[in-house]
Length: 221
Image (tube, rainbow, N blue to C red):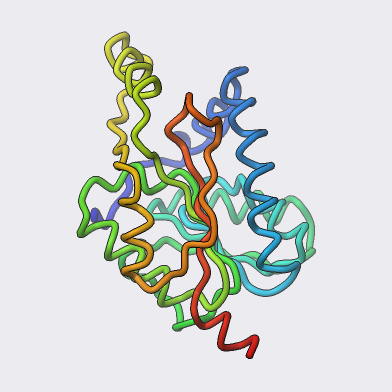
């Protein structure tokens, strides 16, 4: 993976203003948040959480509202900085820190996180080796649960993505996985796959997976 993100400070602010401005993206955001909140209940209401990539801090209010001290990590120094600024502007309740980090080489102790969020990231990882390295690191630092999004092959959504690229609406080349590929990679990394849910069944490639670390089971016995 690249060790440097090209986001500038102004670029981050522009992305933050534009990202969920459209009606369709507001609808996706609302549905996405509802599913994340539902899945993350398994992790309880306190502890330490990792949000990676944190972006400008979209999920920080949710994590802090659930009582989690949180660390935001992003390949972009400017994204990490902006997430910390937004957290500071929201008041003093639970601690929030932000760091710039490569997801495949995390600077955290083994088993330190009770909850890990990785939203809208894995569809940018195009190789099995890349996914395996990142999932291995996620498993290493997680002693509780992980909520991770990925794209599963969906014909209707694939056509829509091609049209958007054809007409210049999107330059992003996302990776959609065949059924079972993400689940097998997560299991190979050492996670238990608890549940996988679609954003919009049948019409959208986006899925969310709830994963559990075996360390969580040991701590409960």
